Figure (cartoon, rainbow, N blue to C red):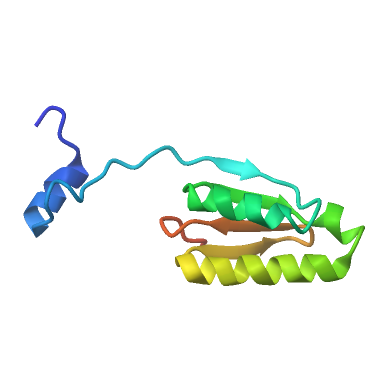
Length: 106
């Protein structure tokens, strides 16, 4: 079985065709500060690409707290839409993940 991934073997057993078994691309954890409301689009783009984003909301909070609330609401709606996940990390940070990554909450 040299060169065959375990995922490929399991897919064959459960009947998935080889065309649907795609090797996962690299996933990065990226820190992107929320400096302006428009940065929401950058964050969404990174998550769409399969990356995990940790964003610090403090830069925008110093300018306009209403924009922070609007940005967090939009990111929350986006996480629901893509079946990803979102969680707060303390007072200043939020993590947003793609569908393939779930956040464990204790």
